[in-house]
Each structure stands twice: as C-alpha cells, then as structure tokens.
Image 1 (spheres, rainbow, N blue to C red):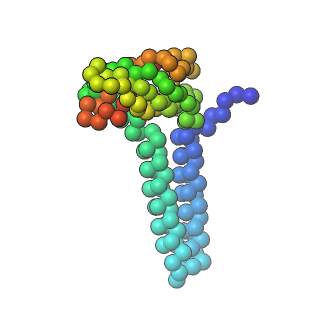
Image 2: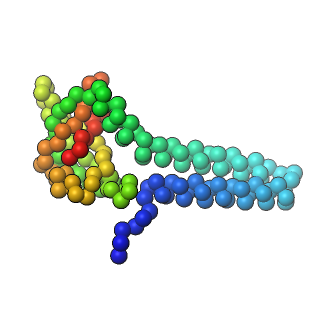
Image 3: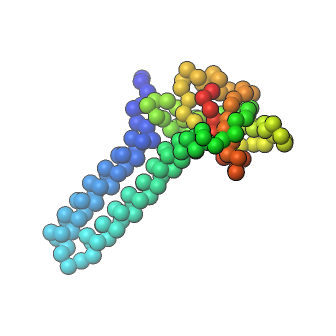
Amino acid sequence: MGHSRWTTKGHVRATIIAAGTVTWAFILTGLFMWRDSFVPVIAVVATVMALIVTGLAFWREHKQPRDLERVLAGTGVPMEAIILEARDTGGRLNEVPKLAFVLEVRPKEGPPYKASAAKHVSILALHKCQPGATVKVLVDPNDPSRVALMAP
C-alpha cells in the first residue's frame, strides 16, 4: 500500500473545518430553536476557544522550528555536533519525514553538551542521520540550548 496522504498539517485543517461546521450547525440550530437561551453564545465561545487552541498547536508544530532556523541563519554560531539519537516524530511535510534529534554539541571552547533539534529530512538523506554521524549545527549565541540542524 502507498503512504498516507494525511499530514499533521492536514489534520489541523480537518480539525478546523470540522469545528467550523459543527459550530455553524450549532449556531443556526440555536438561532431557530433556542432564541431565548444561551446555546448560540456557548457555541460561539466554544468554537473560538477550539480555533485558538488549534491555531496555537499548528503554530507550535510548524512555525517555531522554521523560525529558529531562519533566525540562527543570520546570528547562529556554526559548530559540529554528533547525533546521539534520531527518531521520526510522525510529522510530514510533502511526504518528507520530520525527525527529532538528540545531539552532542561540540563547541570550540568549553565542554560538549546535549541539545535537541528537529528537522524535516529527505528520505534520500536519512542515511546521513544515523547515531554517531557528525553534522553541522547553528547555535544561538545567547542561548546555547537553541540549536538548528543544518542540512545533513
């Protein structure tokens, strides 16, 4: 069988569509049946809360790592790191798996330390992401725990 076309992004969109559909059904039903009750108000408040929570989950999953890579591309300190652990998070972007890494960052000055990073990695490059492999990273000079993995 082929790979599933569902991605984390697809799940978020489906959740938003489902919440919107249920909410409008609730609102329309409430307007016609419960004109003197709080059912429409409760439905609107519940929908707004659901959309906020879904939006925050989407932002956290999809925007933070890319923003970190973009920020560190301009200000990050290049270093090498050794992959201690790599695992598939289950997230996909155009069928490209997102991996979570535990790294041992090796600064030029000071002792090595552990950090974590996540990155979408092409299936063709997965062999470069095995434990023990050396990779290039960018480290936030103000917060060394913030690490962006460069292309493996």
